[in-house]
Length: 601
Picture (spheres, one colour):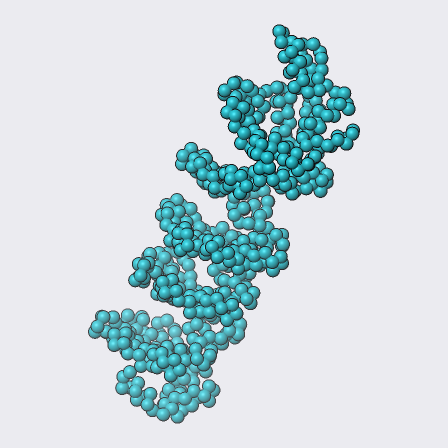
């Protein structure tokens, strides 16, 4: 502090403002202050017309036009156009902080920083917005806020044309084009474009979370994160989309949402030309090319490309499910899962296909659906060249090459490469929990019930032109024509050359040669070549008779047994001898007849 400042500081403040009661040491200082209330700015720049309340401010401003910087720092060579700025700068080298807070002991280099700090303790917010009623601690924050209402963005980027409300955001934006990241972390070497970003990043190493929520005690590394979090409790969503009316709790969420309407994807990958709506999405995508997975689980060592994926993964170990549905009470480990679940109750399907009009409740399902129209198959197998629409289909295919079978049955220890195969395998329990509401028929899985439902909804609409038999599915009619009328057996055993109608039949036949019986009963250890034979056998243990004779009421475990039994009532003998016109009810009886009677034919 120089001698002039000391003289003014030590003099009594006898001149008081009648409007705000603030006191000053000299009448001149009071006169200058009153211009804050009157708005008077008597000093104008001849070059640009800007006005000022003090002549010193005008002189400092004119140096912007002349480029004059008469004040030089001897220690670092920096030059300044204003003497006050020069004196404040020197305190960086001397370490002087002459302004001390009596309440918390904190010290400051500049009086205005000290004055602003005092408002933390007093709660004073002297700058009020007439349009929305918000109050601010600092005049520059108030001026920036005013630009929200006026729409003014005075700072323009020459390279991309983007405009900004404040100079700070403009300077930080410039670093996107220059790639400059002048601030680096001493612990991990990461670099940042802004000092604030570095400060926040360093809390990753220290674990510091100085901002706590008063309602749930959750802590955050930044004040902005706390303010955004508090909207979870208040339900406030102050940012609304003008096109669809959807509201958001964060402005950047609204910015990203608007790109859904505009289709804008301003961030492009230099390696594959793929474009993204957000810079963060681009950064995450680039890890596909680099293989970087910077987030590791301390418990199992698994690594992830995104911190959110690590957070979600850690809940597997902790069992935490912090997101609960208010309507049914179901809990979820991830907020996105809750959002998708809530659409079950609301019926909302916000993702619509422009080509076919189909709607989806989930963005992932929508993107996958679009591949039907585009024909895109982005997942390629390096070993055999096959391509896939979906990542899960690609992963399952990879197990063909690796032989991996990660799903196993708890009861019989059989391994499977797919979860769906394990689910079907569990049918050896005999459970058939899915029932048809029309006819009462039971099914072991929802897929079987869905297929059966077409019988009632559509009927057997595919009719055989040769025998008049009806089928629910076209492929069933095609199979019928091949097997019954065409007698085509396209699947041949490589060992004995015997022909079969289906691939499954020839696979089961091969076990005749190998002696293998892979399906075994857990109740009596009896083994079978086919799963259907095991299912019929399990009904024998359970005493279940699903097929009943309409003539005499007798029950049967298997449909074929019922079919043969009905021949007793109808007198039908569908199996004819090609040699002597004799007929039989069973194909086995016909074969025995041909072997014994016509063995020489």
